[in-house]
Image (cartoon, rainbow, N blue to C red):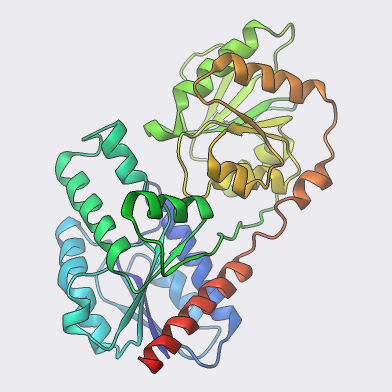
Amino acid sequence: MRVMFDAFELSPGAGKSMGIYNYAKNLFHALVAADDPEIEWVVACNAACAADFQGAGAKAGRVEVRVLHDGIPGRISRQIWLRLRAAIEARRAHADIYFSPKGFLPGGLGLISPRTRSVVVIHDLIPLWYHEHFPGHFGRLEEFVVNTTLVRSAREADRIIAISNATASDIKVRIGRTDGVDVVHNGVPECEPGIPPIPAPFIFAVTSQFPHKNARGVLDAYACYREVSEEPLPLVVCGYDAGDAPGVHSVTGVTDAELHACYATASVFLFLSLIEGFGFPPVEAMRHGTPVVCSDIAVHREVTRGAATYVSADDPTEVATALRAVLAAGDPDRDAIASCVAGYSWLACASGVLRTLRSVCSEKATA
């Protein structure tokens, strides 16, 4: 079985696609480590990300890395890839399966490479949520291109991998697809904590300027917490500049070790995102045994396995009350909290992906 792993559009660094890049890189390393003798991997990538995939391929046979673009592809190159070239490269690679970790199905695959089946990973349908709640936030043209491609991919891919039951449910409700959707949870990387930006104790939050991350909700809830607390803890907020908000210490551009130092040292972790496909931060915090207060959405209940404190993201008073209650409870049982999310590994994720690939290949053989 030859699988073309599409990393052509992915690039390391910051931005709203950073999470998908890390997903693709970590998953591919785990897939190669699984050393399935029945699979030959052909990685389609660009020069900016080639080293990450070549590094995995150097550790095992049956991996071919094809660098198909010099540097990070621009907008035109990405559109040509998505609408035509990816299908051509799948045919050239004699791929039995085209695999997209980004969730987009290339145009013309069935016509240009009819022997190739498709598996796409759909992380979320957040672009459709933006169209409903913040239309045009990323530009009308980008919104149209992304949304139409996402919907087409969800409808036409031979098999979908959803990263949570919540995403699978969203696909059913928004797209109407109920068959050929496999749920495979993400892996969560482990990292040794470094030194936190300020001494403990403090509350820690992760947010950003994107509306669905709800930075305003975080700051309003913290302000409410300060009003009702005699000796309020400071808030360390990562990913967003809170300016001179009282009691708030903003950090940006942190290393993984610094980020995990905040998770591990915080008295409580606050995450008030309005929508997620999986939601790494609460799970990462719990892996360090830190209690979590998070928005009450289905995916948070799923991935934290009921072990967090769930609140209405738009009710600062409720959030403040929850923060005070968690802090007043005293020292948490960090081992018990960590055990709730201990099973999220990249090897487990790779195992689930491999099951889907084998299933699709088996269906092809019997078709």
